[in-house]
Structures are given as structure tokens and as C-alpha cells.
Amino acid sequence: MRDPYQVLGVSSSATDEEVKKAYRTLARKYHPDNYHDNPLADLAQERMKEINEAYETIQAQRKNHGSAYQGYQQGGSSGYSYGGSYGGAYGAYGTDSGYQRIRMAIQQGDLNLAEELLNARSDHDGEWYYLKGVVCYRRGWMDEAHRYYETAVQMNPDNAEYRHALDVMEGRQSAYQPDGYRAMTTAGCGSNTISRICGTLLCINCLTGGGWYCCC
Amino acid sequence: MFGYVRPALDKLDGENREKFQAAYCGLCHTLGRRYGLPARLFLNYDLAFLAMLLGKTCCQSPKHCVVHPIRKRPCACRSAALDAAADYSVILVWWQLQDGIADHGFWGGLKYRAASLLLRRAYRRARGNRPEFDGDTQALLARLSELERENCPIPDQPADCFARLLVRTAQGESDPERRRVLEHLLYHLGRWIYLVDAADDIKKDLRRGNYNPLALRFPHRDGVWTEESRLRLGQTLDQSIRQMASAFELADFGDYSDVIRSVVYEGLYLVGAAVLDGTFRQREKREKR
Image (cartoon, rainbow over all chains, first blue to last red; front, side, top):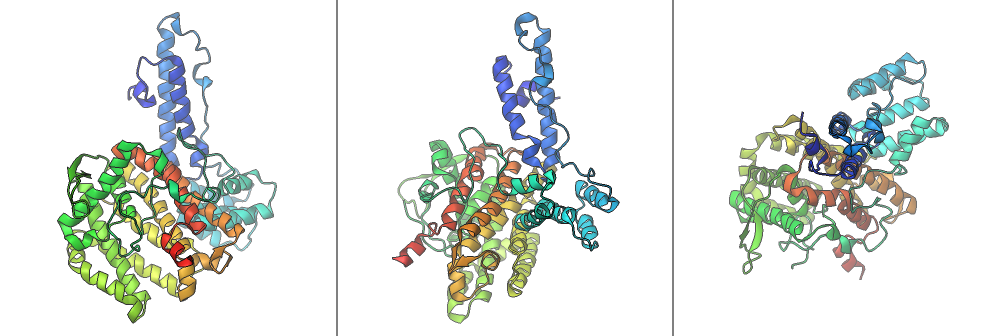
């Protein structure tokens, strides 16, 4: 196992408060919400596990070293406790075994099979549109996923899972931002953004991209 | 690849701006060393960003060059990643030129033919260095032209071709985990570049009657997006940027971490916004006057 302090990115002389802060920042970064239906969710989950273990190890070590650290009574539960919701809660829906199989295929990353099974179905209800959306999302076809999610929500407005997917798609779920950065959207940037983009470097005109760069 | 990828100016300190510049100059020198002067003319920001993604370390030495003859500029040293980025750059630009020739008539295509003549020797050498990548690029761009001919109204489909093309540039990465992360990041980088480029070209495409997947998909008035379309297009671009950021957090990007962070958490949003409201292209501004 790696040095728990190294995992959290703090020195071994860090105060409890600093350790906790480092842990919380990392936990926010690798939070399942940031990797929902993301093909890299398993890596984020591993990272999360490592961070949790490191935090718990440090707490246990400090607790055992005399009474100086008595402030830490909450144990591992003081921070975040995450369930295994990285891949989405597939398999929990209804009793339709056909859909269960499709959800299983998605969870195992077999998108071709999932798509094949979906295309073989003639009854296109909310669940069908939602799962089509998930397959597109996993592939990176975000605009198509958006359209499917929208239809799924229209057909089943009360389904929390579909609504959550659409909320993520339309930027209504807060995502992790590093220190010094704020949440942004392309459409919400406002005007006069061009002056904030780095463009101070080059001098060679690019034939293919159009030679409009300025010399400096 | 047209130079859309930029870091956010106010998020980079002097040291990191220098790193960005050094990567750019390093790629330029590498292109010159491996492929001669003509290849250097085709360099742009997107390719420099690719070089930063592929190479983690940034050793620098000041160098002179044609465009900086008096003052030496910091320049990234030789590395396998820069060599690879240079090879991919030449091949990508070459096939884009071929696409330009095919898309335009005799007069319109002159510019592309001239450029492609200039790049021919470099391309042949790059093809020799990366035959596999060259084959993949050719196949994916052929598929892309097919979709263009069919007037495909689903932007994700042509964007997927371009995205998969960039994914191929990660093939030299030996660590399987890092490779997966890179591939995911590159996919969404490619998707984002393709869509932003299509949004940027909408007026030109409408004027010339060229294929533009976004014009077929989102309502607009003479190439100006309706508010609803701007929102929707922004959302789909945001999704790719978020995916890039989520991948970025899962691998070590070494010396370039701060620069890449400023790209995926701010720079791309700003460029996308400027493209969507038509302020990105200074050339277009000139046309309006």
C-alpha cells in the first residue's frame, strides 16, 4: 500500500484539519456523481477506495498515538461514505427481464449487445428511450443521448433516474471544479470572452486554419 | 485541427505560459527537424495541445528560430512524445488537405493543392514512420466524407469519426490505464473540435452550399443560432468538456497539468462561447466591416 499521506497529497506533519481538507477535496473530485455512466468510472472508484483507505489509516494511526488527537471520534464516517453507484443502479428497474438483460450488458460495457437488444424491441416506452440514451452517452454521442433522455422524461415525468440523466445533460447538476475555477457553461459565458483566451504565442500563419493569428 | 484549443489566459502564471509556449515551439522545431520547413507552416494550437497530452515532461532550452530570430524563446527539448505528435500532425494535416481538394472545385481547390504539394515529401516520410496511423486516418476520413455526401443530419456521427481519429494518437502509450484515460480524453477532444469547427464554419458552409451537420440539426437564421440552439449546442459541447475534465483527473499529466487544467476547466468554454456568438474569427469580423 502506498504511503497514506502521499495518497492524500499532504505531509505527515499536516494537522488533522489539513488532512481532512485534503481528503474532502479529493473525495469531491472522484465522487460517483462526476463519473456517473462514465466509461472511466471504475478508475475513479479505485481512486476513491484508495483515498478512503488512506484517510482511515491516518485517522487510526493518529488515534493510537496518544491522546493528542482526541478530536477525532467520528472515525471513517466523518467524511463521505460512498456506495457503489459509479456505474448507475442498473438491474433495479421493474420486472421486465429483457430490460434487465440490457442494463446488465451496459454495466458490463458491452454496448453493442445492449444496442442490438434494444433495436430488436418494438415497444418503445420510457425505459427504452432512456437505455438508448445511456448507450449513446457511454459512446460519447452526447447530442443523441440528450434527445433520448428528453423523450424518456416526457414519457415518464416521475421517474427520478431519467430526470437525473437529463439534469446532468443540461448542466443542472453541479460538477467538481478545482480551486480557483468556477462552474462554467459554454452558453453562459457571456460576450467578450475572446480576450480571456491565451493567444499570445505564435507568428507563423497557418495555411489550413486561416492565417489570422497576430504576431507578438 | 484548426487551432481552437486554448488555455485560459488569467489562469496561467508566467511559468505555465512559458511551458505552453515551449511545447508549441518544441513541436515546431521537431516538425522542422523531422520534416523540413514546409511542415512547420501547418502547426497550430490543437497540435501543440496534443503534444502536451502525449508527453508528461517539459525540459526546456532557449532557441532561436525563423520567427524569433533575435530573442531566444523557451523550447521543449527533443522527446519521443514530440516526435510522435509531429508525425501525427503531418499525417492529419495532409489528409485534411486532400479532403479540401476533394471538396472544392478547380479554383477553390487551388489553395489546398498548392499546400499539399508543399507538404508531399513530409507526408511520405511521416507515412513511413506511422503506416498504421496513416491507414486509420485515411479510412476514418473516407467514412467522414461518405457521411457528408449522405448529408447525415446527426452531428454525433461525423464527430465520432474525427474523435476516433484522435483516439488513435494514444496508441504509443504503454501503460494500459493511462492509455484508457488518454483515449477517453482524446475522443472528446476530437468531438469538441469537430463540433466547434462546424459551428464556426456555418456561415461559410451555407454560402457555399457545403455540408454542415449542425445547420441540419439546430435551427438558425442565416447562420446565426437561435437562442434555443445556442443553449442546446452549448450543452452538447459542455458534455464533452466535462468528460475531458473527468479523464484529466485520472492520470498524471506531469509538468503540463496546470496548462491542461486551464484548458479543460475554462479555456474550451471560452472558445466555444466565442465561436457560438460569432466573435472567435477575427476574419469574420473584418468581413462584417
